[in-house]
Each structure stands twice: as structure tokens, then as C-alpha cells.
Length: 597
Image 1: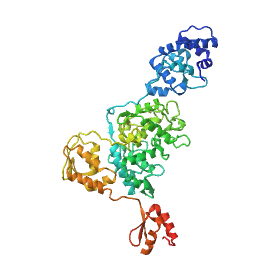
Image 2: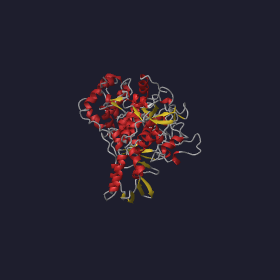
Image 3: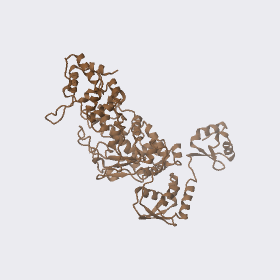
Image 4: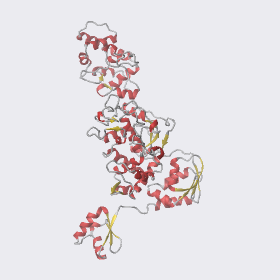
């Protein structure tokens, strides 16, 4: 037990005398027993409350936080994140250079030392257990920390705002089709797609990457120059692979059974599956994408990846949906509520530029904002945003965070990570569903000023208002642009939309909400037919074609009960067998005394 009596007896006489001086009590002798008794008497009866009320507001908050904290310990990191500042324990005068020395010196102790003590052999300041019990009788429990929100991102030059939910719902199905035709390829070792592979993926991203190509890539880049490079193509390739929706056979991609099934699922279910799989995957570490921080490949010091992700998602699940949150406030919220995590168990192994001088193990070099915050930025920008879980507001990374500038080895860095420009984010309805904030997914309906006219000829024209990017995307999913602000409903596009999981009913509601007249019967009929015909044929996987020597052999094989539902006659002598059933097919055929060549 760490009672007041025990702690006081472990203090030096000078420390005891300095605390008595703070109380304004005259010293009676210099023996420890007398000093301890004098201090204990000051806390008796109403003395404790008088000491409490004499503290400044920030000091009272520190004592209150400690009283109600596990182990009654004061945590300066959490406290600063919650209150924006920390109280002073030793009020030393400023030196000639203008800096105040905060090292322990009992003669400069503040009154906060009367209630917060460091036990012998300990490192934390705590409230003695018996004082804490008495303090809780009149000290109110500290307020719960809530994450601060904004109605809109803070305006600044070069700010880009990306609404991601509708993009993601379309892009995930398009990329499954890309994998189906063999063009989604990824390095098994790094999870990075080639330049040519990025181009294939970008062609499927109706919103494009987060940074335009002329900004993301530097022509004739020198080896020491930084480049933003791809973000969404890297993320999507990794996510779909981790979700086990495709595999690679040689230089071609191939949908797995799960990938084939996903083609007929609602896209939000596919995204939820990908998110859950990403949270538990151990193949890829988001922190590896922060290339400026070296030493990550050293063995034994990088922490497990899933616990980091769960720390961030647990904090996200406590945030309100559809409200903008700055990344700094979110970071403060995680620290202030104790939802902290480690990226490395040994920061001395991480470094900038050179291992000896640029190590993050030096005091002030590997702090939360350099390591954990950078991890959070990558996690949000490269994985949550492409999946449509958060909308993001961001600038070029060269205009982003500058907190790394004073570190050794950072002189030539234009940015510490490509994600440094992320300013704020907003949890979408899809994100609220995946983070567990809501139990059901309700598609986002963005406010719109768009006015349309839908004609019986299946032509759609814009009359007034502003065409939002998400509205343009949806129109061009179902209809072909024929003139500026004019679209023609087209069968092939509409069928492809249904194949990707889009709903013709939802699109009809979209049109009706923007047209003051009822939709023409030709349009509703067109959409109804597309909804019905778009799912007329379903893909159930790859099959092998076998040619039997005669019709009797084909009939004999198909008649076997073990092959029912797995072997299909295609003509008198030809049989189709699902790839997954090939071993069973061969076994049954051999049991009939026949061979397969």
C-alpha cells in the first residue's frame, strides 16, 4: 500500500521541509519523525480540502485525473492531450537563455507536490491511497473527453476534399472484374503493383487516385528526390489480395471462389469483408510505406500489426459519423483516453538518414507525433479512405506537417510521409457501419442542387444547379455522355452497372429526386428490364471440359451419385467439371475402371 505515511517516510528531510514551507507552517525541529507528523497534521480534518482549494485550476484537474485513474497515477501525456497543457511541479526561474529548468529542486516546488508524490523506486507521480479516498468525497470525477468536431474542413490554399463512399462502392466491383480478366497483379513479397499494373487499376478508379498524376509523379526524378506515387492502387491491390478475392497464376490474376461469389453481393458487404480481413492481416505493415523512416526491416522490434489497427479503429468507433475531425484532435483523443499503441519496441533501431546520428531513440525524436501519428495517417489515408469509410480533406504533403524538421537527417526531406498532408476526415455512413457505430448500412444521400429532365427517349439533361462529382459518376455509370451535361441511357452500361451490384431502383430514385415530373414509362421500363436481365446469367467459377470416347461413357459417368451437381453434360460425349471437383471426378472415373488423359 502507498499511504501518505509510507510515502512521507521515504522522502528526504529536505523534501519534507520544502512541503512544510509550502504550507506556511513553522518548522519544529529537523528530525524526520517531527517533519512527517507536521505534514500529516496539515492533511487532517479540513486541511486536505483547504490544500485542494488553494491549487490552480490546471493543478486541480491533474489531481482529479490521478484520483480517478488506475493506480491513482498522473499521466502527463494523457493530461496534455486532454487539457492542452500540463501543470508545473518545480517553478524554477528562467535562465539567461530564456528557458526554464523543470528538473526537480525542492526549494522551487509548487503546491501540486503536496498531493502528488513519487514513491520510492517508482517513476510515476501518484496520489496516496488514503488521500485519494478522502479527495473523492469532494473532488468531482473529471469530465469524459470527447473528440472535437468541425462542421467543415478548415479552409486553406491547395486544400482538396474527397468524398469517397460512392467511389468505393463502384470501384470495388470494377476491380473484381479486373482481377477476373487477369489484369490485377501484385508482388507477393511487397504487395506493390508495378507501374503498368497501377495504370490498369487507375483505369478502373472513376475518381482517380487522391493526387493527380502530374502531382504524384516526378518526371526525371533524381534518386534523392521524394515522390508521392500511387496510394489507391497500392491499397486496392493489397486489400483484395488480403480479402482472398483473387490469386495469381503466373502473370495472370484469377478470382477465387470467394471472389466469384463477391461479384453477386452488394458492394457494401464486399467492403465490410475487406476491412475486417485487413484489420487482422499480418502480411503487410502500413508503416513500411513511410520510407523515410529506416530500420524497419531489423528483426524483433516492430510490434504486431493487428493490435495497432484495433487501437485506431476502437477510437474511430467512438467518434461521431458525418462530422469533420482534424487528425491532430483525433490523435489527442487517442492519447487523452489512453488508447495508445507502439509501432516499435526499440526506437533506437528506427532512424532518419543514418542509424547512429538519426536514431529515433534520442529524447524527443521518436515521440508519438513522429511514429504513431504517422502510422495513423497512413492507416486512414491509404486504407480507410479508398474503401469509402472516411471522406478526407488534404493538401500536398510538402504543405503538411512540419514537426520533423528539427530532427537530425531531416534536412533534405520535403515531407516525412506522403500522408503528411491529411488535415481532417469525416466518417461516412459506410464507415459508421464498418466501424460498428451503426448496425445497418444506410447509403449516404448528399444534398444536391442538381435539376434534371428525364425524357421518354431515355435522354437525361441537366437544367440547373451544380453537378457534384458523385452525381456525375452515377450518371455515367448508367448513361453515356453525348453532349455537355446531356446523357443517354445505354443498355451495355446499365447491364454492367447491375453486374457490379448497382441497383436500378436506387438509380431511378436518384433521377426522380432531381426531376419535378414523374419518370417516363419508357425509362422505368428500361431500368426494370436491366435490373431483371443484368442477373440472368451467373458466374459460378471455372470448369474443365472433358471429351468421352462415346455417348455411353458420358452417360455412365454422369449417372454416378458422387458427381451429381458437379459434372454436367455439354453434348453427347462432352462433360464439364468444376475446377474444385477435379480430384473427386478423377477418383470416381477410375473407380469405374476408366482413365482420364
